Picture: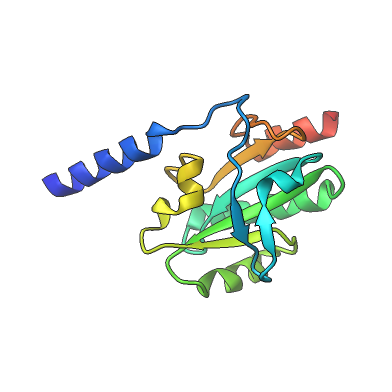
Length: 157
């Protein structure tokens, strides 16, 4: 029990150390998309980007996915969605993504035995999923908005 508390405290301190804040440049990262295409977040400047961390094993993520799909369908010219699946293996996410209707190109699977220690999640100080970050067309972090708030921001712009 004591060991678990220590591990939790270390994890929390580790993810808090480089915490990103509103108004800062979104941490750039390189990854490989599910189709093998090289990806770099900074290449998406010019549109709003919704960076969504999720997992096929996460019930709240799966429950939120229809709202993510609806945003993608409503704002195809204003919003680019980038999903980062935090997974222990590289296969279970595909069935979930297909079932939930993920049709966008920018899908990344970040595989790690300890899913919350994925390199991309650490850059964004992700401590739990689902976790979403709205990034402005200039590449600046906005807020961790709800789907309704994201819809409101995009409908005004």
